[in-house]
Length: 354
Ligand SMILES: Nc1ncnc2c1ncn2[C@@H]1O[C@H](COP(=O)(O)OP(=O)(O)OP(=O)(O)O)[C@@H](O)[C@H]1O
Image (cartoon, rainbow, N blue to C red; front, side):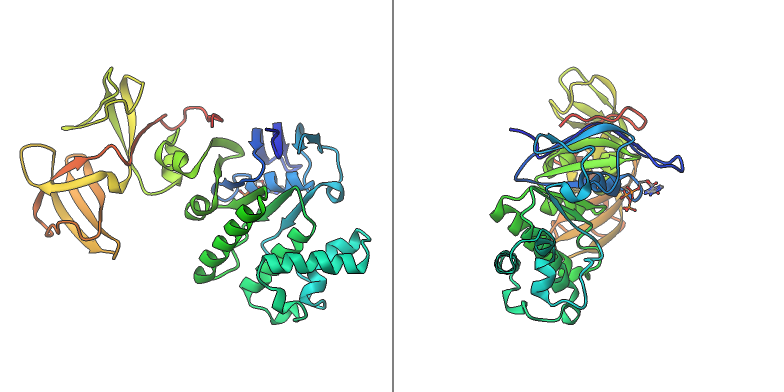
C-alpha cells in the first residue's frame, strides 16, 4: 500500500546552524494515527511543519499520497493542520470559523455551510454552530479547530500537541474523541506529542525521535515492550537498566536471577531493561535475589515498593495490594519475562527498523 506521507533522506539545518533533522527516512501508512514522540527540541514540530510545507528540507524529498510535494506551496498541499493555539477567529461564530478554509477555496456559500456543519457534527458541536467562539471552553475550542481542519477533507491531518492547552481532565476526553474520530472516518493523522502515555493511548504507530533522528518506529506495544536502545526504553516509561550476561539459548543472567529463554539472540554481555512490574516479591528464601523492603506506597491500582538489593535499590510495582510486605522485612526478588527486554547500549547507532 502506498504511504500517505514519505520522507526520503530528509535533512534540515536552520540558518543559525541548528541541525533539526538528520537523515529522516519515514513512511506513514494511510488510515492510521502515527505519533511523533520525543523530548523537547528533538525535531518533531519541524518534521510536522515540513509535511505542511511550512518548512523546507535542506536536502531530501517529501511525498504525500505518492506525489512529490517537496517544492509545492503549503496552500496547495492536501493537508490540514491544527495548531496548539487553535488559532480561531474571535469575530466569527463557530460555523463561520469551521467554514473559513472552504470559503477561501471559493466554494459556494451553501456548500461551505453544508461541509462545515458535517464537520461540526463529527466533533459533536452541531448545537453550537451559531455560538460566539470566545464563549466556548478550551475543549470546545479545540473541537472547533479540529472541525475546521476536517471540513477541508484533507488527505492527511496534522496535529501539533493538540492537548497541551487543556487541563488534565479534558485531555483524556479530547484524546479519546480524536482517536474515535480518526478511526470512524479512517483518517490519516500525524500527531506530535512529548508525552509517552498520550502517544501510547492514541497511536497505531509511534515514531520515537531524538536529536533530529528517528530512533525507533513501531506499535505502542513494540516501542514499550521491545525497545531497540536505552533511550527508547527510558523514554517510554520507568525502567532500570543493568549489565547482564546472555547464553546461547538467549537466557539472560542477572546476579542470581535467570530470565528467558529466547529473550535475545546476542550472546555474552548485554544491557537488560527491567520495567517495575517485571519484579515479583516472594517470602525470603534461598532462591531469588535477597532484598529488604525500604518503603511501600499503596497507589490504588498498584502498590509501589522500594527494595534494597545487591543490584541496588529496585522500584517494584505490584498489582493491587498483592501480598503486602512490611517495611524492613526481608524478601526474595524474582524476575518475570514480561516487562524485561534486551537493548543496544547507549551510544550504539539509531535504528529505523520497524
Ligand atoms: N526557525 C528556527 N530557527 C532556528 N532553529 C530552530 C527553528 N525552529 C526550530 N529550531 C530548532 O530546531 C530544533 C528542533 O526544534 P523543534 O521545534 O522541531 O523540536 P520539537 O521536538 O518539536 O520541540 P518542542 O517539543 O519543544 O516543540 C531545536 O533545537 C529548535 O531550537
